[in-house]
Length: 142
Image (tube, rainbow, N blue to C red; front, side, top):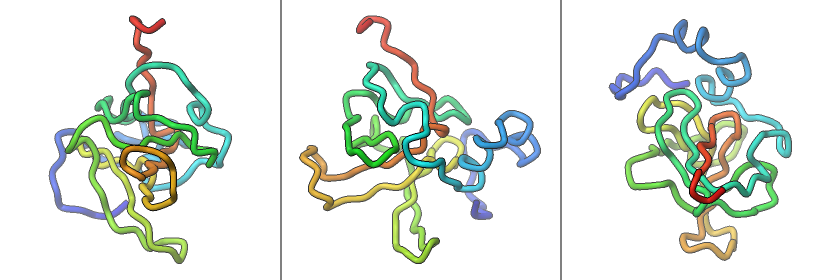
């Protein structure tokens, strides 16, 4: 995690995050880790609802923008709304990528890629770790 001086609506000490999150959640959300592909809770989920940040509860994505990219992680073609996520340049692992973080608490969510040829309205793939999300099911759709 970078040592940014920016203030976010939800700000906690690393000790507070460690107490509130499981070790895996902490590793991904606070240390920019990645879960193994095809192991997360939501990679193959087709349930209607809103995906929230597991760390702070901010609404980030909906099932309407989720699509099957067959990459092993939940994929969305856009966030729920402008300003819900923030973007950072990431050159770890010897490649250039755009990291996606929660705009509310600065937790790591995954990465966004574009120009991969998916037939989506934005030609983008938000490749998000399941462990970074919780799904609030749409009761009306059940």
